[in-house]
Every structure is written in structure tokens, then in C-alpha cells.
Image (tube, rainbow, N blue to C red):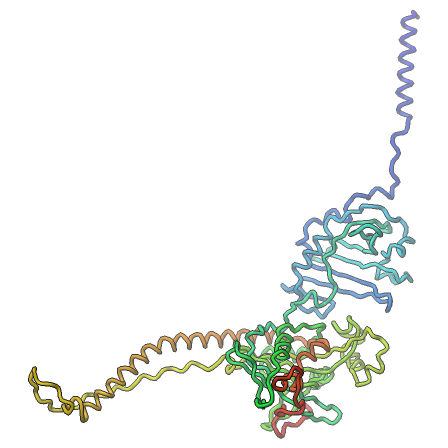
Length: 536
């Protein structure tokens, strides 16, 4: 082997040694497996917010150690709240915002990889029956129309010193991450429903009757109190009160404005479904056909039927009524039922062991304030709403003008021929006698006919407008009754007090700043012989 060959052999061997050494040298250190999802989406396939047709929110109440469930879903062509008796929801836009905030939610920072960390980050599943921890997260689940899960998160407490960041994990994973969440979410019932219950325009109100009677269920009789009847026509005029001593009293317009505002802005805090047969009767508007079960359900809520002098029956309420009419002809009948106390969840949709039994137990028996150790229990009242068309509220019906009768033929009178240059005489036939009378009647007729011909087109237009208003009113009444038929509503004590006003607040002394008057004065709420009794 020559020197050159020997040198080449050494060079090749050295090169091969370098290659082997390079291949054996470890590369950059790999991240531990627990970090492999950092920076990735929780649900990479969830890209379309419109696909979300169901939202379930489960929150844990550490005070009661119970999970609270709230949900919104698209069913039967409507958005509904399954956890609140499928009450219609105004939820499309709100759900879309919530879904959009959940899209492409990223695992930004690893917070912990063990189940033992869940209590610290407050991401314990609120439905976990095995865990004893009271520090649990809020679980939010989005599903498509077929019920397939699009995204499912347990959101814990906020990350300290990182605004907008929360501890989050998937329910099927133990690893917890920090993630930025811009939640567009509310679990309050009132935030998901149509806020305008009555769909009433306050400026169109022209009649309000506040009937402050009550029902003594123990003695089976109606206790009459004052009745206040407020009117205004046109609706731009100040309100007037019937049976007002105008020499000493005047309407407290400020308090009436509060009453109008309470009607215009009436909001509910809860609902209860009515019995199926009662729902049907109310939708058909054919009169309520009572059976024992329906009568019992009504009675528990504070609504009864009383016999009238003509042998009929009329719905009466535990705490009176408010009747309000608009110039559209729609008359609202608001019946105030039983008062009860409960937690926010109990107020919204009822009680866990059945509405009827629990509602009966929770009625305020007058000792509520003495017993109320739990300040979270709020007083509320049942409300029964119906509407009807009141033609009088539309205003006077246009009266057709009467076409005047013609005076007939002119009487035949011999009129002497008068020379062209002879002056007219006051005693000529056309100025005196039958012909003069006819000429006057003819003049009056011509004027009346001209007025009739001018008034008739206006009458026809007014009549058409009135008929259209009546049809629109009937249509609105039907729509409202269909909406109200299925539900008893729950209103707050404050709403009740704002609506059930009386002469004590609605009347003040002339020139006085403070309201005055006799709250016991006024017309009785029912005619003589109106007796409370069991439904037939």
C-alpha cells in the first residue's frame, strides 16, 4: 500500500467515524408529552357558530351543594328553554354570540395535568357525584341539531393577573389549561326570553281600571275595596279619574305615569305551565270548561270562579285585577294570584318535588317575615293574563251621513208678467206664500246635499279605517291570547305594588305635593249578588 493509499484510507475512516458520531449525537430536547397540545384548539372541527342549535349550561351552587341546569334549544321551529318548561326563548342571536366565543378556543398555557389540580383551578365537573369539592366549574356544552356535541368545556376561575383568561379543561381530559375567553353568556331566565310581556304601547292606553278587591278563601267571599277608573280621550290628554271631587282633589299624574310605565314595561321572573285542557280552552276562546283538576290547579295559584247574578261565572283573583285598554281596541285583563317565596331557580320554573305541592307549601301565610331566616328567598306573585277586543276603546264608530230629502216640486203659482223696467216688489209670489217657502226649503236642501256629498267620502274613509282597526285589534287579541294561553306568569313583589295602585296614591289634594285621599272610597269591584263559590 502506497503512502497516498494509506492517507486516503485514514481520511475515509475518519469521515465515516464523523458520520457515525453525528448520527449518534442526540438532537434538540423534545418537549414532554403533556405539552404537546399547547397552542392547539380544544375542538379543531368546530368552525361554524350557526351549527350550534343547543346550549346547556350547568353551574354549581356551593351553598346548596346542587348543580343548576339551564339550556336553550331549537325545537319545533322555535327557540325554547327545555329546563324552563320549554318556554319560548329569544335566543338566536345570543346563542350565536356564545357559540362564536367558543370557536377556535386555544389551549394557550398548561396549568396542570392531574385530576388533583381540579379543585385548585375550580374546574371540577359540576355533575361529578364522586367529588366532595365545593369549588366546581361551570360546564358549557354546545350541540348541533342532531344532538352531536360540538364543544364541551368546564370553565373554572379567572387566572390571576391575566385579564380575560380562565382555567379551562375538557370534561374528557384531566389536563387544565389557561385560555382567553370572551363569554357572551347569561344563565338568567329573564335574559333569554321576550322582555316585553304584554306588547303594550303605553302612549296608546286610554283606560285603566285598578280593582283592588281580594278573596278570603277561608270564608269563601270577596272582600271589596276601592276601584279606580282612569280615562283619557284623546290619549294626549291628561288622565281623569272617575268619582273625583274636583273642588278638593286632583289626579296625581306622576303616579299615573308610574302605573302606565309599569304596564308598558312589565317583565316576568318566572313561568308555570297551565293544565292542558285550560290551555286549549283559552286558545279557542270558547269559555273555560272546569274540571276538578283544573279548578285545583287554578286555586293553588290563587285564581277562582265566582257565580254572577245572571247565573254565569267569572274569574276572580286572590288580590284583584287591573284592566287596561288601548286605542287599538285591545283590552288586557291582569289577574293577581297567590303570593309565594322561593329561590331564584324556584321562582323561574317551580319546585323540585312538583309545582302544585311545593307551591302550596311556599305560600306566604302572613308569617313569612317572622320566619324568613333565609334572605335569599324573594316574594313573588302569580299573574294570569288574557285579552279581549273592546270596541269602545277604538273610539266612536263613524256615523254615516243622512242624505237629505228633496223638497218636492215647486208649487204652481200664477206669476204676473212684469215689465223689464218695472221694479221688483216684496209682495210678488216668489217672495211670499207657498213659493217662497219652497224656495227656502230648496235652499236648505241644496246646502244639506252639498254637505252630505262632502261628508260621504270622509265617512267611507273613516269607516274603512275603523273596520281595519277593529280587524287589526281582533288579530292582535288572538295572537296575544295564543301567547298567554299556556302560562301562568310570575312577577316580582315590586311589579305587583307598582300595578296595584289605589286612590291613596292616584289622588292628591289640590295644590298638595303629597298624595291624599280615602283608600276605601270608590265603586265596588262587583255588582250586588256577586257571590264567591265553587266552580260548576
